[in-house]
Image (cartoon, rainbow, N blue to C red; front, side, top):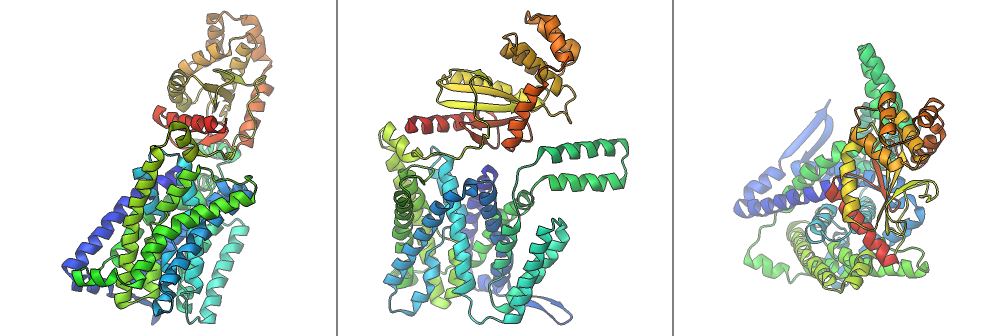
Length: 605
């Protein structure tokens, strides 16, 4: 999720630059702008194929990759994100629908009785990259859960928009090509169910489906969404990683092409298709395809007469009012209604002030709105629609800034409640902290519990240890818990070191041994461990006997089982108040997460 957000917000800057470039280009030399994007490009095989101008290649071809990312992120949310608890599906779905229906109603009201009313689809979609970019710019002190909430709403928004494109803005449909396209997607589903992982096969089926759906008259972006939803997401499983380690050892001993191929396959299959496809295509979509779409579609020839006429037109005004009024009120009201109807059992993951700010930023519609505009309008009406979309995006950004500044002006207690809310977050830690069993450092009544699954021989755990020390020093209300996850297939002394720590714990010296083991990660042999026992003043004979008989192997195994239950496969892995921490584990990143968890806990108490 962090990587997705980072890519989206980074791509927003490129998107803005492409939009500005399109406006400058069309107003400096409109003829060259039109000439470039109306140039025909044909791909023919045996006299038949696809022939379109460059703008349509971008809108119907490259944008299929954009919708592929939408489908991938929707599937990731269902499998690993907030929506893995299906009860939480109602809230973002209602927010997305409410945030679309009210803007559509406003647009239809403004355009009632006019031919332009059929362009209602332009006024409903949120641009994910722009919205997240504005939150990154204006809302840095607000919780990442706000960006996650808006992202979830935006993904649901895009899926509904896709359905609108495929139905309301599809006219004459040719049945035979459509059936061929559906058949190709059906074969992809069968291949997925049979766990076939051949990328060439899926690419070939996707190409057949895209061409067939295009020929049918339906917008072929459907292919991208469908393939994205097919791509399951799951965390790397420790058993798969251990098998990959074993294969690498075999390859190291016998570096043959056969072992190399087997190892590549094992590495690839250890990661979910969803993660691999997002890593491959998401940066391409955010930094190249969507900006290229803006360059091809955002160009508006602006002069005084056009501006005065456009801002008086029902199309432009309908879009602006729909986004500035309909989006924030629709999202806020529908979220409130779901919360009220559920008796408070379903709540937004953020406070109501954040929901309002998120609704305001959702008023930035760009990519999908422009795409629908090109399907719904032409000529002057299309230019008016584009101006409305761009003006709404600019005004929604300003409105978001006003809302967020107003929240920050509230007294601290009210501000925390408005920002964080009181909802219970999903808990990723399968086995709760047990004060009678776990190794705990820090006050028992602390607001924040910080759990680490670690390996004493893991160099990354050694690097993270300094950050943990700083956290404990900086936050007096932080409780730190260590759980064992020895990576025996990678580190030869990991299991022995974990058992040594437990043998020291039996003599009341766990944390002292913990400090020594992480400080001397390159010296963890039996001889070294016995030396540390002497240094700590332990009963060395008792300590040696415990290691020899593996007396505490079951205790370590219990921690490993709890790691497996929580989907942990590598070290270090952190959980903050039960939520798994993804991404960097430097001091600044961990401190930000601890502060957010503490604020949430303080509001809840």
